[in-house]
Length: 101
Image (cartoon, rainbow, N blue to C red; front, side, top):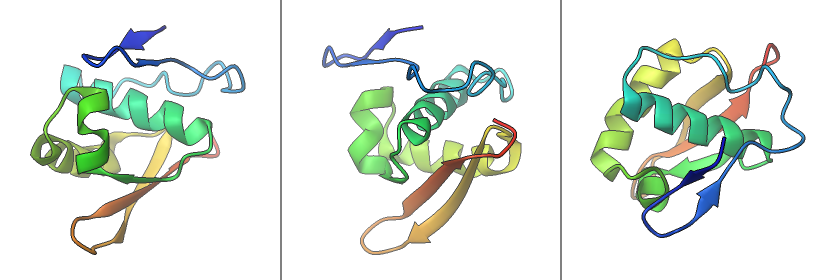
């Protein structure tokens, strides 16, 4: 499934992403789902570190919304592992696909 953000940037599932990866719904919250899908796809493509302020436009959320949602995703997402990595200026999050994904 392709998604296009307001800046016209398209992000989609990688051809190397396993078919079942990135498909586990979180809790029905569309904003959380959009963020989870974005992080899952980017992690599958090899990106591992994210700051809310740098991905806000891509997922059409504010950095503050991302910060709140990413904490929820840490507890509920089963297809990615999320941990705070650095606190310099703002939290950097380390995201990896899980073994089951």
